Length: 418
Image (cartoon, rainbow, N blue to C red; front, side, top):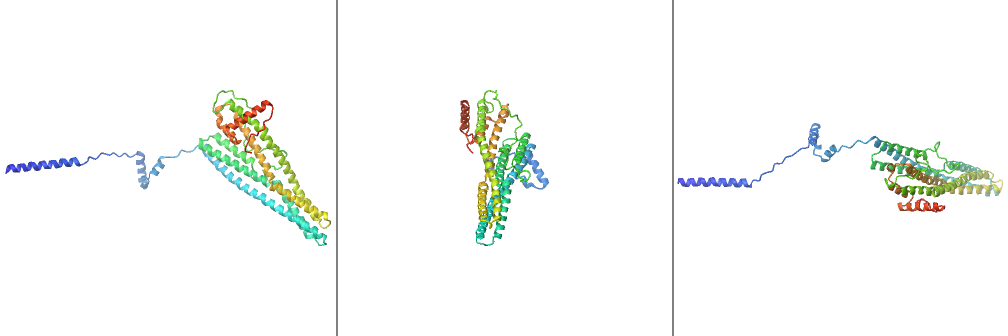
């Protein structure tokens, strides 16, 4: 009996031990995980708890904003941004004034022609009625007043040349937009310097001087004695002596002796062909505009005098009607054809080629090749401004050099755009 109890106890102990062993085998051993909290996050958490705003701690974007602090812009960058805002404002101002002056030209043209034609019609009716013995005093007075008003309005319109004023503002808008893009490109590509700010300021002031907004006191002369191209860029302080070929051999910063010679040939082509042609055309248009500006008011003045004497002879009515009709035709041709705008367009085109010449000349005068703009990039810019590819520009320079050696003038213009 005792032996049986002993066996039972041993069996129970063994079973209990086996079950404990199995239980220990089936229970997985959990790994120890160590969490590290960044010092910055801990600091932010404490600050958030102190401020009573713990919700920002778990916000990932807020954490990134705290950690990514923007760099302070330099003084030159801030100044250039201020200039950029001023340029954008000028673009808007010049565009608004351009629309106003364009409307001014259209409204004045239509009004003066309607007045002139109405006065001519009255003069014709008065002449016919006078032959029938009817009193034409009212028609005489009315036509005379209308012709006189048309003469005064034409004098003012020819003095200001609204179509030319609109073209000036159109060019100013385009050039200020161009400058705006240049500033934006400068800010995007590199950190601006004080010299960049100075150069940009000079460009803005030169544009303000070339295309003034006021009409009185600062308006450009509409009938100058001589045709002169527009100038909207600051003149280079460097000497205007002809540049000599650079003595450095090889290719440095994209520049070589061949490229310098190519640029000189382009200058010669532009000076002898493009600039001369636009100066000739500009002078011709200036003469035509002067003749038309005198003829219009003169014809309406003659018509006003003739209409005052309608009824005292058939010749006065004929003079009034003929002069009034011719005045309408002259006015339509001058202001409807926008001769002033054409003159300003030629000024701008000639100025474009002068600017291109100054830019190339100033670049070649810089003897330090590293300080120049990259030669290949400069060549591409010149080619694009002339409406050509770089290969076409080289071919043009080669033909120009060959023509000069043969003692003949090249029969090709430098620009293909206009």
